Length: 159
Image (cartoon, rainbow, N blue to C red; front, side, top):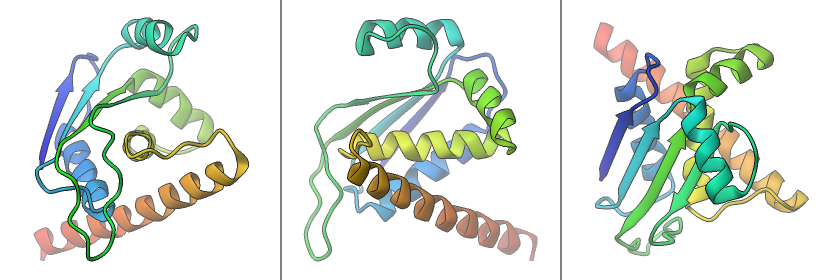
């Protein structure tokens, strides 16, 4: 799995954590082990420009997902499709503001946005109530598993 992280935002972000999380989510979703993902962290002006150009929406947003090969989650006992998952663009400044409003850390918000974006790349959406319930339920489950996974990793490194 190739996961490239580019931080062009000027914000201090734990790129290795973002890379580990992306790999974790992609593994859990049974994405092909040779699939490619690029995550770019940008400032508010850049994401506002991308949001206007590609989504026809004004102002900065938190995450944009640009799927490439339209990969879908792999099924049990089925070989997943190889290809390029796509590009995620995250804005740490927007994430920080949202985190403050939600009462959690910027790291937690970036984890949520990374997971959310990967699910979009895999074809999940939340326009309809049923889709919203499915996507956000899956997102919550993946984030819960990720936190347990990270806690175990940190414990084993200390032990």
